Length: 259
Image (spheres, helix red, strand yellow):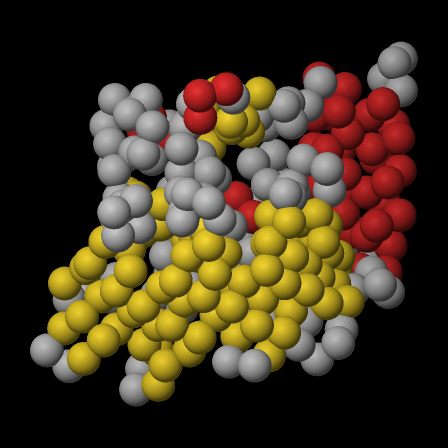
């Protein structure tokens, strides 16, 4: 939590945070409705870190953090599939049913990072040599050094399990609460509407938000869970090189209509 006094734009976006010690946070926004951060500077210890963002329709595609660039790739549903870090190393992303990144694996099958979270997104563990290289984490959203996530229209504070701005659509019963109080079965990566896990918010005519798309069919859910189980079993048994093979094999088995 940055503390201090927060200032907001006419579109309800946080533009700065100031305190008696100076400016702790500044942000500039782009897109027609001025809702997506183009750059953010935050105080980290005694130094400032500036993040510059490039986006596509699928999400953040590149970040430059104090001059160090990281490139991200997504699937058609916007889930992170991989990244190239500032050192030029490629990592494949493993995500859960909500799109949260739970591990990174290099092209040889070795685990390079692991991430664990509370249901409300608070980091309980970041491990591995590439752990800090990736900042697309819970729900696949970008995490600032302050621990806050950039969840679409709003910022989200996992320590308080609340958004820092009210619901911009007026559709939520509680303007600041996350996921209608059920972060396991609901997700709100857009900051606009809580959707059942596996679905995502879609903007429709008039600018309102609805839930749709991205829902896995039962056999696809079996495949995803089997893949994760297979890869995790390979890591636990000390055979990281076989992780992806085990995961794919388990997935194929799950898709068998007679299984």
